[in-house]
Image 1 (cartoon, helix red, strand yellow):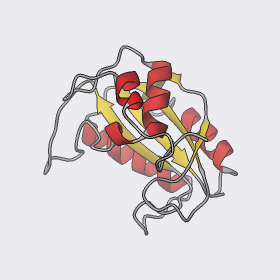
Image 2 (cartoon, rainbow, N blue to C red):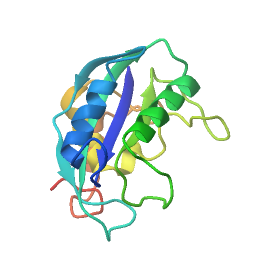
Image 3 (cartoon, rainbow, N blue to C red):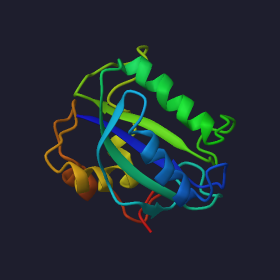
Length: 162
């Protein structure tokens, strides 16, 4: 199972954050990518830097024959089309696409991309959508499912669903 997280909190060339995430989901069904399913769009508080607007988030399950590095290049290309400019870590962005899991592959640093995504277990805005679309999914390292990881998080912490 290949899982991709989507997030936006700035207006960009594709419109509002809601419109941007919706359009990005369409882009995940083109050019060698097949969108299998997507969570509903949800609004979350910012994670990391809290002095910015709320995010619109989702998680998608896709299929592709692309390797993880090639898929990351494709995701970065989609981000650029949506007006993403990488400046401030955890800052506002028109679109953020994160490769969360690639068929259970484990690639630690210094491999690129690092898999599974190192932030999955701390992010409500990632775990809630995974629990929605893939309740049987298990973290490739901890072997815990999204629902059990979600129960361990403080809903008042950064990245909580609004």
